[in-house]
Image: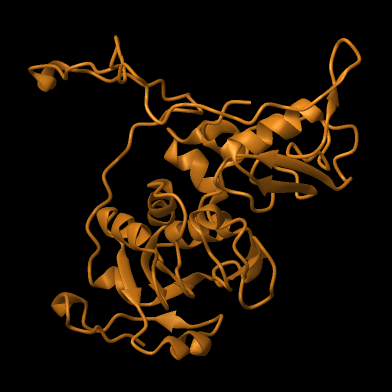
Length: 298
Protein backbone atom coordinates (compact mmCIF):
# COMPACT_ATOMS: atom_id res chain seq x y z
CA UNK A 1 0.00 0.00 0.00
CA UNK A 2 1.33 3.43 -0.90
CA UNK A 3 2.23 5.72 1.99
CA UNK A 4 0.14 8.43 0.40
CA UNK A 5 -3.10 10.37 0.76
CA UNK A 6 -5.45 7.70 -0.58
CA UNK A 7 -5.29 5.06 2.16
CA UNK A 8 -4.58 7.72 4.80
CA UNK A 9 -7.93 9.42 4.24
CA UNK A 10 -10.26 6.47 3.87
CA UNK A 11 -9.94 5.57 0.20
CA UNK A 12 -8.40 2.14 0.74
CA UNK A 13 -10.76 -0.29 -1.00
CA UNK A 14 -10.08 -3.04 1.53
CA UNK A 15 -12.06 -6.24 1.14
CA UNK A 16 -13.07 -8.41 4.07
CA UNK A 17 -15.38 -11.39 4.43
CA UNK A 18 -17.04 -9.87 7.50
CA UNK A 19 -16.98 -6.06 7.88
CA UNK A 20 -18.60 -6.34 11.33
CA UNK A 21 -15.68 -8.33 12.79
CA UNK A 22 -13.10 -6.41 14.82
CA UNK A 23 -9.75 -6.46 13.04
CA UNK A 24 -6.38 -4.76 13.28
CA UNK A 25 -4.04 -3.09 10.84
CA UNK A 26 -0.62 -1.54 11.36
CA UNK A 27 0.45 1.43 9.25
CA UNK A 28 3.14 4.08 9.35
CA UNK A 29 0.66 6.84 8.47
CA UNK A 30 -0.03 9.76 10.77
CA UNK A 31 -3.69 9.17 11.60
CA UNK A 32 -5.41 6.29 13.36
CA UNK A 33 -8.89 7.38 14.36
CA UNK A 34 -12.04 5.41 13.61
CA UNK A 35 -12.77 4.65 9.94
CA UNK A 36 -9.72 6.65 8.81
CA UNK A 37 -8.14 4.05 6.54
CA UNK A 38 -10.85 1.84 5.09
CA UNK A 39 -14.13 3.36 6.24
CA UNK A 40 -14.78 0.47 8.64
CA UNK A 41 -15.40 1.42 12.30
CA UNK A 42 -14.41 -2.14 13.30
CA UNK A 43 -10.86 -1.67 12.01
CA UNK A 44 -8.41 -1.00 14.82
CA UNK A 45 -5.60 0.99 13.27
CA UNK A 46 -2.24 1.20 15.02
CA UNK A 47 0.61 3.50 14.04
CA UNK A 48 4.21 2.27 14.09
CA UNK A 49 7.52 2.99 12.39
CA UNK A 50 8.01 1.86 8.77
CA UNK A 51 10.54 -0.72 9.97
CA UNK A 52 8.14 -2.31 12.45
CA UNK A 53 5.28 -2.22 9.94
CA UNK A 54 7.49 -4.01 7.39
CA UNK A 55 8.50 -6.65 9.94
CA UNK A 56 4.84 -7.36 10.78
CA UNK A 57 3.98 -7.54 7.07
CA UNK A 58 6.75 -10.10 6.43
CA UNK A 59 5.79 -12.17 9.46
CA UNK A 60 2.04 -11.90 8.94
CA UNK A 61 1.65 -12.03 12.72
CA UNK A 62 0.90 -9.13 15.05
CA UNK A 63 2.61 -10.94 17.94
CA UNK A 64 5.93 -11.15 16.05
CA UNK A 65 8.91 -9.55 17.81
CA UNK A 66 11.72 -8.91 15.29
CA UNK A 67 14.24 -8.56 18.17
CA UNK A 68 13.75 -12.12 19.42
CA UNK A 69 11.53 -14.16 17.09
CA UNK A 70 12.50 -16.20 14.06
CA UNK A 71 10.82 -16.94 10.72
CA UNK A 72 11.07 -20.03 8.56
CA UNK A 73 12.73 -19.37 5.20
CA UNK A 74 12.25 -21.25 1.91
CA UNK A 75 14.79 -23.86 2.98
CA UNK A 76 12.93 -24.62 6.17
CA UNK A 77 15.49 -22.87 8.34
CA UNK A 78 14.66 -20.60 11.27
CA UNK A 79 16.12 -17.16 10.57
CA UNK A 80 15.90 -13.70 12.08
CA UNK A 81 15.37 -10.47 10.21
CA UNK A 82 18.44 -8.29 9.83
CA UNK A 83 18.21 -5.00 11.72
CA UNK A 84 17.09 -2.20 9.39
CA UNK A 85 19.75 0.10 7.99
CA UNK A 86 19.79 2.99 5.61
CA UNK A 87 21.09 6.47 4.87
CA UNK A 88 19.68 9.71 6.17
CA UNK A 89 19.90 11.47 2.80
CA UNK A 90 20.60 10.33 -0.78
CA UNK A 91 24.35 10.37 -1.46
CA UNK A 92 23.83 12.21 -4.76
CA UNK A 93 21.11 14.50 -3.51
CA UNK A 94 17.59 14.60 -4.87
CA UNK A 95 17.82 14.11 -8.63
CA UNK A 96 14.60 15.29 -10.28
CA UNK A 97 14.43 15.24 -14.05
CA UNK A 98 10.83 16.40 -14.27
CA UNK A 99 9.80 18.89 -11.60
CA UNK A 100 6.20 18.71 -12.81
CA UNK A 101 6.01 22.48 -13.19
CA UNK A 102 4.31 24.18 -16.12
CA UNK A 103 4.74 27.93 -16.40
CA UNK A 104 1.47 29.89 -16.60
CA UNK A 105 0.37 31.45 -19.86
CA UNK A 106 1.88 34.85 -20.52
CA UNK A 107 -1.59 36.19 -21.31
CA UNK A 108 -4.19 34.47 -19.13
CA UNK A 109 -7.03 36.46 -20.69
CA UNK A 110 -6.95 34.05 -23.62
CA UNK A 111 -7.25 30.95 -21.43
CA UNK A 112 -10.69 29.35 -21.53
CA UNK A 113 -11.70 26.71 -18.98
CA UNK A 114 -14.49 24.54 -20.32
CA UNK A 115 -16.42 22.37 -17.86
CA UNK A 116 -19.45 20.35 -18.85
CA UNK A 117 -22.53 21.59 -16.97
CA UNK A 118 -23.57 17.94 -16.55
CA UNK A 119 -20.32 16.95 -14.85
CA UNK A 120 -20.69 15.46 -11.36
CA UNK A 121 -17.03 15.92 -10.49
CA UNK A 122 -16.15 19.38 -11.80
CA UNK A 123 -17.96 22.66 -11.34
CA UNK A 124 -16.74 26.21 -11.92
CA UNK A 125 -16.75 28.25 -8.73
CA UNK A 126 -18.81 31.40 -8.34
CA UNK A 127 -17.25 33.92 -5.92
CA UNK A 128 -19.15 34.39 -2.67
CA UNK A 129 -20.65 37.83 -2.25
CA UNK A 130 -19.58 39.91 0.77
CA UNK A 131 -21.80 39.52 3.83
CA UNK A 132 -24.16 42.42 4.53
CA UNK A 133 -25.60 43.67 7.80
CA UNK A 134 -29.09 42.43 6.89
CA UNK A 135 -27.76 38.90 6.41
CA UNK A 136 -26.47 38.63 9.99
CA UNK A 137 -29.81 39.53 11.53
CA UNK A 138 -32.30 36.79 12.39
CA UNK A 139 -29.82 33.99 11.71
CA UNK A 140 -30.88 30.46 12.59
CA UNK A 141 -28.65 27.77 14.03
CA UNK A 142 -27.49 25.24 11.45
CA UNK A 143 -25.80 23.10 14.11
CA UNK A 144 -24.45 23.47 17.62
CA UNK A 145 -21.63 20.95 17.44
CA UNK A 146 -20.92 19.00 20.61
CA UNK A 147 -17.38 18.04 21.56
CA UNK A 148 -14.67 17.49 18.98
CA UNK A 149 -15.49 18.94 15.58
CA UNK A 150 -12.59 18.52 13.18
CA UNK A 151 -12.34 19.21 9.47
CA UNK A 152 -13.33 15.56 9.02
CA UNK A 153 -16.57 16.18 10.91
CA UNK A 154 -17.19 19.29 8.80
CA UNK A 155 -16.19 17.75 5.46
CA UNK A 156 -15.74 13.99 5.59
CA UNK A 157 -13.09 12.48 3.34
CA UNK A 158 -13.13 8.97 1.88
CA UNK A 159 -15.47 8.49 -1.10
CA UNK A 160 -16.56 12.14 -0.90
CA UNK A 161 -13.21 13.22 -2.32
CA UNK A 162 -14.54 12.25 -5.73
CA UNK A 163 -16.41 15.56 -5.60
CA UNK A 164 -13.56 17.83 -4.49
CA UNK A 165 -13.92 19.74 -7.75
CA UNK A 166 -17.70 20.10 -7.43
CA UNK A 167 -18.72 22.30 -4.51
CA UNK A 168 -22.45 21.68 -4.83
CA UNK A 169 -22.00 17.91 -4.64
CA UNK A 170 -19.38 17.74 -1.91
CA UNK A 171 -21.45 20.17 0.18
CA UNK A 172 -23.86 17.29 0.67
CA UNK A 173 -21.47 15.87 3.28
CA UNK A 174 -21.25 19.08 5.37
CA UNK A 175 -21.33 18.33 9.12
CA UNK A 176 -22.82 14.88 8.53
CA UNK A 177 -20.58 13.35 11.22
CA UNK A 178 -20.72 16.23 13.73
CA UNK A 179 -22.70 15.54 16.91
CA UNK A 180 -25.76 17.74 17.41
CA UNK A 181 -25.64 19.15 20.95
CA UNK A 182 -29.41 19.17 21.31
CA UNK A 183 -30.11 15.48 20.65
CA UNK A 184 -26.72 13.75 20.72
CA UNK A 185 -27.23 12.47 17.16
CA UNK A 186 -25.31 12.97 13.95
CA UNK A 187 -26.83 14.49 10.81
CA UNK A 188 -30.19 15.22 12.45
CA UNK A 189 -30.93 18.88 13.21
CA UNK A 190 -34.15 20.80 13.73
CA UNK A 191 -35.07 23.03 10.82
CA UNK A 192 -37.44 25.86 11.74
CA UNK A 193 -38.57 26.41 8.15
CA UNK A 194 -39.97 22.92 7.76
CA UNK A 195 -40.41 22.26 11.51
CA UNK A 196 -38.87 18.84 10.98
CA UNK A 197 -35.53 17.20 11.63
CA UNK A 198 -33.34 17.16 8.53
CA UNK A 199 -29.86 16.12 7.52
CA UNK A 200 -27.53 19.05 8.15
CA UNK A 201 -26.86 19.83 4.45
CA UNK A 202 -30.58 19.65 3.67
CA UNK A 203 -31.38 21.98 6.56
CA UNK A 204 -28.74 24.45 5.38
CA UNK A 205 -30.19 24.51 1.88
CA UNK A 206 -33.73 24.93 3.24
CA UNK A 207 -32.64 27.99 5.21
CA UNK A 208 -30.54 29.38 2.35
CA UNK A 209 -33.28 28.98 -0.22
CA UNK A 210 -35.71 30.69 2.18
CA UNK A 211 -33.35 33.67 2.43
CA UNK A 212 -32.37 32.91 6.02
CA UNK A 213 -28.70 33.01 7.04
CA UNK A 214 -27.33 30.44 9.45
CA UNK A 215 -24.73 30.32 12.20
CA UNK A 216 -22.67 27.42 13.57
CA UNK A 217 -21.59 27.03 17.20
CA UNK A 218 -18.73 24.86 18.39
CA UNK A 219 -16.43 24.09 21.28
CA UNK A 220 -12.64 23.99 21.75
CA UNK A 221 -10.12 23.73 18.91
CA UNK A 222 -12.91 23.74 16.35
CA UNK A 223 -11.72 22.79 12.87
CA UNK A 224 -8.52 20.99 13.81
CA UNK A 225 -7.10 18.64 11.22
CA UNK A 226 -5.92 19.16 7.69
CA UNK A 227 -6.24 22.58 6.10
CA UNK A 228 -8.83 21.56 3.54
CA UNK A 229 -10.48 24.59 2.03
CA UNK A 230 -13.70 22.61 1.66
CA UNK A 231 -14.35 22.64 5.41
CA UNK A 232 -14.73 26.42 5.07
CA UNK A 233 -16.21 26.60 1.57
CA UNK A 234 -19.03 24.15 2.17
CA UNK A 235 -20.69 25.88 5.16
CA UNK A 236 -20.36 29.19 3.28
CA UNK A 237 -22.04 27.58 0.25
CA UNK A 238 -24.90 26.41 2.47
CA UNK A 239 -25.50 29.93 3.74
CA UNK A 240 -23.48 29.96 6.97
CA UNK A 241 -22.44 33.53 7.68
CA UNK A 242 -20.78 33.11 11.08
CA UNK A 243 -19.05 30.40 13.10
CA UNK A 244 -18.88 31.08 16.85
CA UNK A 245 -16.75 28.79 19.00
CA UNK A 246 -14.83 28.55 22.24
CA UNK A 247 -11.56 28.37 20.29
CA UNK A 248 -10.41 27.70 16.73
CA UNK A 249 -7.73 25.61 15.16
CA UNK A 250 -5.62 28.35 13.58
CA UNK A 251 -5.66 27.20 9.95
CA UNK A 252 -9.40 26.63 9.89
CA UNK A 253 -10.05 30.08 11.32
CA UNK A 254 -7.96 31.52 8.51
CA UNK A 255 -9.77 29.46 5.89
CA UNK A 256 -13.17 30.67 7.10
CA UNK A 257 -12.04 34.27 6.79
CA UNK A 258 -10.67 33.60 3.30
CA UNK A 259 -14.13 32.43 2.26
CA UNK A 260 -15.70 35.61 3.65
CA UNK A 261 -17.31 34.00 6.71
CA UNK A 262 -17.17 35.50 10.21
CA UNK A 263 -14.93 33.47 12.52
CA UNK A 264 -15.81 34.53 16.07
CA UNK A 265 -14.89 33.28 19.54
CA UNK A 266 -16.85 33.60 22.78
CA UNK A 267 -15.50 36.25 25.15
CA UNK A 268 -16.86 33.92 27.84
CA UNK A 269 -16.64 30.28 26.69
CA UNK A 270 -19.37 29.29 29.14
CA UNK A 271 -21.86 31.23 26.99
CA UNK A 272 -21.77 28.26 24.61
CA UNK A 273 -24.12 26.51 27.05
CA UNK A 274 -26.70 29.31 26.70
CA UNK A 275 -27.35 28.70 23.01
CA UNK A 276 -30.80 27.22 22.46
CA UNK A 277 -32.03 25.20 19.53
CA UNK A 278 -34.69 27.72 18.48
CA UNK A 279 -32.60 30.87 19.00
CA UNK A 280 -32.63 33.67 16.45
CA UNK A 281 -29.18 35.28 16.34
CA UNK A 282 -28.41 38.93 15.51
CA UNK A 283 -24.96 40.51 15.22
CA UNK A 284 -25.73 43.99 16.48
CA UNK A 285 -22.62 45.93 15.53
CA UNK A 286 -21.63 44.31 12.25
CA UNK A 287 -20.67 47.59 10.56
CA UNK A 288 -18.18 48.52 13.28
CA UNK A 289 -16.56 45.12 13.73
CA UNK A 290 -12.77 45.32 13.83
CA UNK A 291 -9.80 43.44 15.38
CA UNK A 292 -9.68 44.10 19.11
CA UNK A 293 -13.22 45.48 19.09
CA UNK A 294 -15.53 42.81 20.58
CA UNK A 295 -18.78 42.33 18.68
CA UNK A 296 -22.15 42.19 20.38
CA UNK A 297 -24.79 39.70 19.38
CA UNK A 298 -28.02 38.43 20.81
